[in-house]
Length: 173
Image: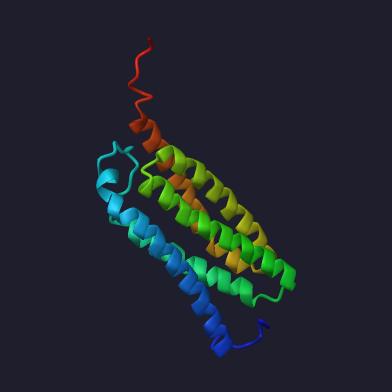
C-alpha cells in the first residue's frame, strides 16, 4: 500500500478493520481468561500502588485502540515489504503474549507464571517498537504508552507475587 493512497480508500479501511479486529479479539480473549477469576484477584494482598479496578478496562481499551492504529500505520508504511513483515510478525508475537499473560496470571492464578510471561511480553513490545520505528515513527510512538503500562503491570505482577507468596512472612527454620 502506498502512503499516498487515501486513508479512506476501501483497501485502507479494510486493512484498519483487520488490525482493529485482531486487537479486539486479543482483548476479548484476555478478558475471557480474566473475568471469571476476578474474585481470586480481589482476594490477593495488593501493593499500595495498585490502581482501582475501574482503571484497567479504560487503560486497556485505549491501549488496544492505539495498538490497532499503530499496526495499521506500519502496514500502510512506505518501507520495504520485508521490514513491514518483520515488524508485523513482532506485533503478532506481542499480541499473543498479551493474551498468554491473562491466561498465566488470571486463569492459572499464577503470579510467578504471569511474571515470566509479562517479562517476555515487555521485551517483545520493545522489539516491536524498534521494528515499527523503522517503518513509521508515529506507529512506534503510539506503542510507548503500551510499553509504559506493561512496565507498570510488570512491577504490579512482581509485587503481587511477593506479597502473596508467603516469602515475606516465612520464618527461618
